[in-house]
Length: 450
Image 1 (cartoon, rainbow, N blue to C red):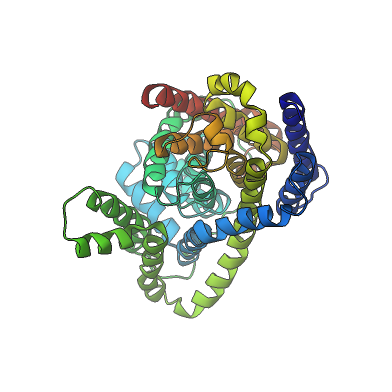
Image 2 (cartoon, rainbow, N blue to C red; image 1 turned 135 degrees about the vertical axis):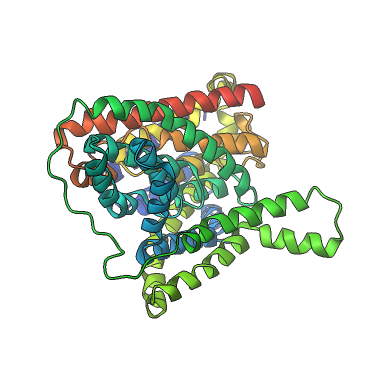
């Protein structure tokens, strides 16, 4: 098969997957898996090898990043149900104060969405935004959009949010999550700068309507400790940082092994989960721990399986020799650099709406940076830093753009008091600005650092 033929087949397969998800509402797991099988057959993978290719791609994800996704989801659920997310938001509001209400809402959203899904985070925190708008006389539309921007930025860039965690695992960075967290924090915060000015301008031009009522999870609960709420977020970051630092120091082997063990993402997040128990006890919710775990399993399950299906797609790309077939295009694709995965993720996001699906699918296509037969290798992304920048580029694409097929679009417009017809010139335009700003910064960083 010629390189052009292989590339056209790959493009047609991706188009089929998008149509299956967006038009026919087939679950992303089945759509990605079915596309992988079809692509394997069309690209000439021997039929007797296809089951092994599927098993390798599917099982590899479960042995790598699945527990990290599960623990991250469970921590987020606990912070959501106990009122920890609202306590985090209130703490940030007290620090930033009434003088900078838009900045306060952005920072609240940015912190809350690290452990909590952005949709849930918006519903939880929107009452604080309404209250702050009344107390400061600020535009409620500006504050709601600022909150949405903060939530969305960390949602697509910073582990342990499931999308970025899954992408890190799919490109081979499951043991380098601290690098992804650090880059994600920097890029996400920088993407909020244009969003800050945009929300200030658009709030003066868009008239609010009466928003839906947000429900605070603190209703009927005792006061939630901000310190206990911050602990599950900061503890795994500190443990992973110590594990990385100890590896560079000349310490006794026993000590080094202990810190290296504690710094592994799975262990660090497991310890972070245990640190949630005092929060549950203080809120009198230990009896609900089983129910919270059950609901978290139901939330994390689809994400893990979609991520595993992305792993199958990446395995098919490697097994079929597709990368070898398109090597004649490698110079052109290398010229695009990190813009290439950005464009794929942006197309997937705009077509089917889910940022998590866009992230995991694109990362699955790219494959492991250490695999010589992967798309990552063909494009020259063969180091941990290069792979982390690819994860950032995929995250930037997955926020470009939020519109009517995105649940977060309707959460923001519905609970934010924004007319649906104004959603495109507020939420959609804002996410476009954030996405383009992010990929510009990532491309500059790649040009300098790689």
